[in-house]
Length: 218
Image (cartoon, rainbow, N blue to C red):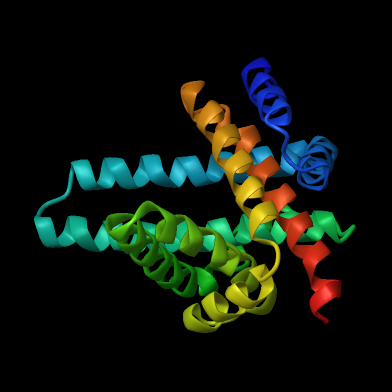
């Protein structure tokens, strides 16, 4: 973990965040180190897809073609992010993640993108009305991506199940995603290169927390 991200983690620890939440990031870091090559290569492939699309759009022959290319990339990127989440769940479940897992869930890309659109719209509306409803909605539905990844659920079903899973765990989920946001902000600040580490570690921590909630709801 880079010095900047480590300092961010220490600041968070001093804020009094739950030991249970912090333990998932510590486990996530250990899991990342054990499979660093697989996660780094997958992140590089994700970045490269964005560069290729940027070049294609730059040299597009028209607005419509550029829009189609952008939409295709959003679907590809969404599917690859689901693939990274699959890798995180495999690691947490003591299975072996592989680079080709990045492309193994492309069919779930549309569901993820649509659920993300609903999620962002609801949270934005909540923040526009009052700040507190936006925070509440952001936390209540924050596990939708895990449910799509784990259960191949549709967008609305994933959001509904995420709300049920979050019930009674709002404070810890808020802390979990705040830490993930701060770590990724620190990673992005290092010319974006730190995201190669911070994003997989965050996914691993979230996957571990998600798994820890399931026995209580079984």
